[in-house]
Length: 161
Length: 161
DNA sequence: CTTGGAATGTCAACAAGGCTGACGTATGTT
DNA sequence: AACATACGTCAGCCTTGTTGACATTCCAAG
Image (spheres, rainbow over the protein chains, first blue to last red):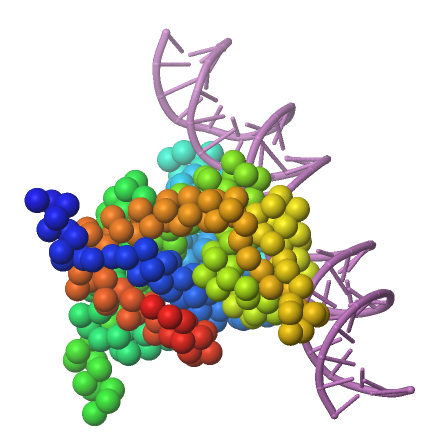
């Protein structure tokens, strides 16, 4: 029943799935292109953007938390984080309770850059949402969630809306 | 009217847009993770996957065509293409009409690897489509299309379904 | 109080895969 | 004959990922 029903509801040829895969590829390129242009002006890359985004999203987060979310090694993150701290975009405060931890916050400059990047990306996303319509948006979100690794999906869902 | 209607249909807070942005990031990571594992066994990277995908998609395509679709420099593509040809995954045939052109085809081995990669990715996408439901799928596709750069979107739509 | 382990930082080396710039070689086109 | 196009290639640079090794700091358990 399950298999048959699914086939009926969702008849997916190899070709259709390939189209979806290509769409993901092209859309992601569009999705990153606007912030990329801004980052270039600052001599930053996407890794910097991601750090800024998630620090803004969870102010006071620790390096280890950030590591888990970003899914990179501490050496890789550290390189990026160091430049951001040096450039006065990020503030790394020694933890009160546990002084080994560094709690990360955006500075005024960091917030300003993050907003600039977010707005560029949001502009494209808002336009896409509008063009596609409100029903498409919830479908879009549902499929994206279903495409995440389960562990990440749990993390994603646990974040405040 | 336009602005007001849009707002009514689609009330998008900064937070909601940020959620969409994060969803894109996490979903794309899931989306690439399965093929990544296979590629690693072959000593290949995502660049090889993309080349295999689009050569399979448009057999006989030229290097210049591929360059345009992938949006990279010829030096970057050449590095990847050379290893694929050396490894017997891709066949670069001199053009009949214009002998400056190289027409790219997958070999039997290339097709085999491409299928393996595609199936891994399709499995995840099919599961996501099923979990999200058929209406979600068309919404997903609509938003992705709307998120592409216009030039790419035209190209994308022009491809056979 | 000592010690183990966790959290963090840092150094070094390496690889993939982008980029630019320059140059060479066929091959077409005018 | 001259110019343009398609492709390859060499050299060098950058970002961002990796592993491995090691130091520091400091909480917490024994």
